[in-house]
Image (cartoon, rainbow over all chains, first blue to last red; front, side):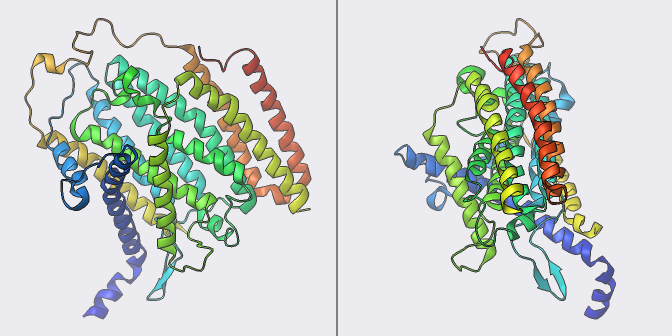
Length: 341
Length: 118
């Protein structure tokens, strides 16, 4: 009986593995977001010498869940002069791109089940890095559409600012990632991690690491680069008009992007699941590094004041972009003339 | 080869389902008590006097154009970064020349004040 079923399933094995992987990634991401919100609120509480949420469930762990349920049952206001279709489309685009981006992230060595090698990734793409850049930059559409469709000047300005900021910092992101591509000679994220088995790229490529991290914080619209939602000037930026779960979807997108960005920094610069101290559970090593980076994101938020918009653009174009170009050129010259000579 | 894409393809479907599902769920589940004032765009308690769709700073346009230029440059750099071993010193010098031209362009925009926000 079981043999019959297995025989029947045999040609579809790849499909079953794909479905299981995709479900695990989606469920994992969606359940990490409330945890991350909880972590952020707890840590922010400690940074500001207060307790943070501690009433709902042990350590306040139920708070994020309670918030999610509350938001789901809140009224969903679409103001009458808004462009209805785009207004509904925008949060969906943000969440969609955030989840899909994660599919190219590898988080461990492949393991064997019944003669099949199963990799711990949604898809091991040869162009993994390009795929991530391509899909994640589509998230800008969600923000622009939210700003445009709301028919509200705060939303529109927030959307404009946000899109200008994101495209400005994307250049630095790409150029500093290029240093890693130069060193590893591959766009495949699994191969990039493999090539760091002796030393994480954060050490030889330290300037690129710093540039990538700054640009990464700006790309995810986190403080001190959270200009699109500068409350004092723009109410809530591009999601001023949103309420209920649609409002929460923008936050979900932001938090998933934060996780993806931390995972990407871990893979490109911190050696992925290589522990370097003989600790041999790859997935835990990877999760620990991602967790540390997420804490740094939260730490930054509670430490730095938001920078002014003109300084943000000046910083991006006049400091980060030339620096990343020079860094990239220097490493390519070193690579061709010294290492490969 | 195609099999390595199944995970990503199925996640694409799941992500669509999640995104659409959440929008639909919140639309169905929430209460619906609407009246005229509530449906107006947010404006600190006043009526909206002018349409938000007006001229905006040309800087945003300039940033978009510059982004396209430099992003195309990055697109050219990625294949070179993969193939630099085959191209060697020749490729490096070629790329330097290419980047020099773009660098001159960036300097020009910089000097003309295209990167200043005031």
